[in-house]
Length: 232
Image (cartoon, rainbow, N blue to C red):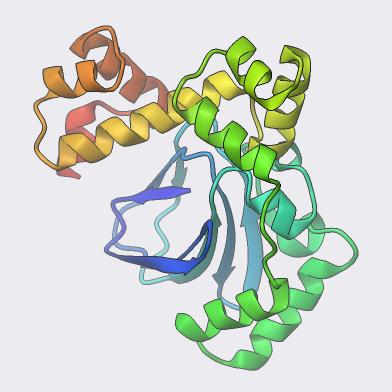
């Protein structure tokens, strides 16, 4: 989950493959861009899970509402939370309903006892989750897919059939390797554009056929023109 247009946002590395973040919503809806990640989100005493998005979604205006979360890199979330990413694709649900074996309720109770926001919540979540390293095959699959490696070549490197690659990808990321590549490529391009790389050069550097192709992907994945993402 990658947020746009919130009034205050901060993130930091919490553990390998896990980014902690805090956000305070402003006077406008928050546009959440797809990034291939899973998030655990603590808001107003409730814990929720945001699955991997296939396109942008808008979080309604909730003035001065503070959120604290953990973002799990592609392939990391399912190993930590104990469920396939495909069960959460394009969903934002209560952790108590999503996580197995009463884990969501247990996490929520523990966080309520912390009585804080920000780093206290992050520390509580990390201590309760006890993050374990994700499957090395899955992590390698994430890197290869994000780079746009053709599916047969991914399978050859990992010793898997194309069908197995797709199945592992859906379980680990919530969708197949081609969509993960599209999302990762768009996120890379957006970072470069914000760093001042000209759009035409950025398109070529990231494997788009031309600047128009990059613009189409922005509308398809973000729902708005690129200029809105750069000036919002």
